[in-house]
Length: 279
Image (cartoon, rainbow, N blue to C red; front, side, top):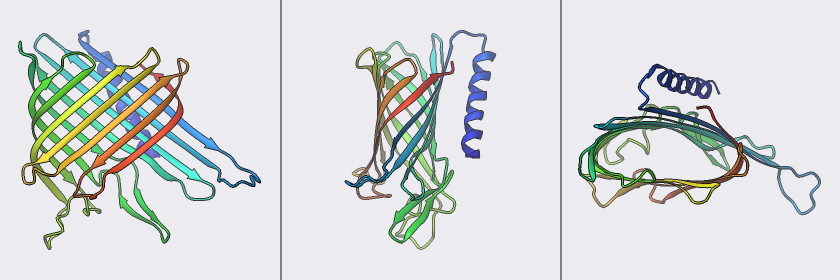
């Protein structure tokens, strides 16, 4: 919890200070926080069932500077959720930190050159659960992913964007190199993996109706050493506003990396929540 509060305070302080310090009105800043939850209770329910409670905290921030020569977009996301069933220990339902900075130069042509830096990790320890108990398999910054890319960006409007370029992805671990960074074909245990390759990132942010919005990002990465193996990360959120503060959110995450698992990974959640825009 201390990690979560520290990171939230840091992002809030930096974003607020930046928006106040810039006299230039070309800076546009936004910070949105949301708390989603679900709950079920059973007492002497003959048909069967177990009491459950789940909650999720989302914090999304963005700061964009636009001039006649370039657009500099900085964004950050923190999401952490847990679920508890009956007397069992609470387990994570989502845990991610994502920071991204994209600088694209404005050409007279449809495609603009860009440079991007991205960092991804998690807040808390992760465990694999089985009948024999639980085993820790990850931790804060373990693993951590960093990607630098350079290429061209196509953005026909404010709702859709596509960028394609050369990229370098670093996977850094400490206590849990397997399966994230270690190469099983070597005797040495590698804690860092560097993969030069190519990336394609397609994003959609669109209002489907007056109260419903979709935000979707499809992130594809191909290492040059194995072009037939594409890493896929697809995040999609549908958010429907019930009132100014209350919303319903459907989140679907699909992830595939054959070095981590030969099967695709899927995470889906449907929750009712409270959303508030700080600025």
